[in-house]
Length: 120
Image: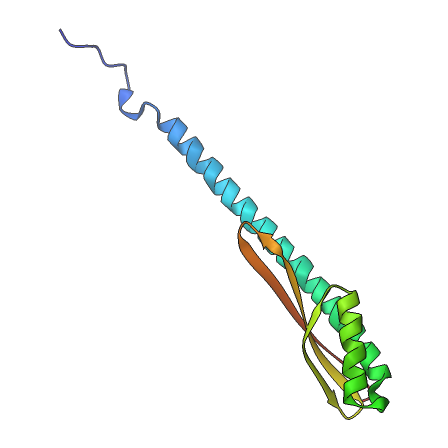
């Protein structure tokens, strides 16, 4: 004697698999969105720090490169950023800042921004 097969029994349990795949895809898309938002926040922090540091450096540009870049470093540090480049071009200051955010989902996030301030 053989067991009777239910009608349409060839796809039994497939809804569970499709549901699981949907949950995994939604989770991955959500994680990607969070990571992207996290990077955008870092970029905005780096841009704000670069802008403020460049303005502060331009105010000290008449004193020379060393004093201007020293104040650039202080202002950037106060805004949670580090300076990767500071250059004085006449009375204009060019600054590149970096903001390192804590790793998210094991991915390190480093945001960089560039700003220039001064006459001309």
